[in-house]
Amino acid sequence: MKDSRPAEDGGAIRRRRVCPDCNGRFTTFERVQLRELSVVKKSGRKVPFERDKLARSVQTALRKRPVDGERVERLISGIVRQLESTGEGDVPSETVGRLVMEALRGVDDVAYVRFASVYRDFREARDFESVIDELKADLATGRDDDAL
Image: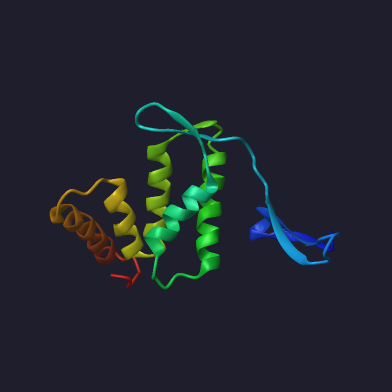
């Protein structure tokens, strides 16, 4: 090992390593995991929580949006910390979705609407209108965000 230091606000350890065979250098990130989590689907089925799956969902919602990658990583880490701090090993999928929606709402309105369309299973244009009306109400009550 060449170098080791905290990363992501202490939620991970960044290690610079050297391959003993080829002397190539590479970086690894080791995340601190407070507890093993399972996601309980609507059907009642339990699946292991996957941080990468959460990250893919967030990245999909934020595709082609002007949001810094570091901010996205902090958002994902914050959601994971909230899930781990519940004290529960089994987390309902609705809780995960709600936390993602809350986080995206504070970052980018377009990403929020994109995620909401999947999470709330939009069926028609009227569904989009209701979410956009919620965002407009937030703006009218003083939320300072010009993403809409």
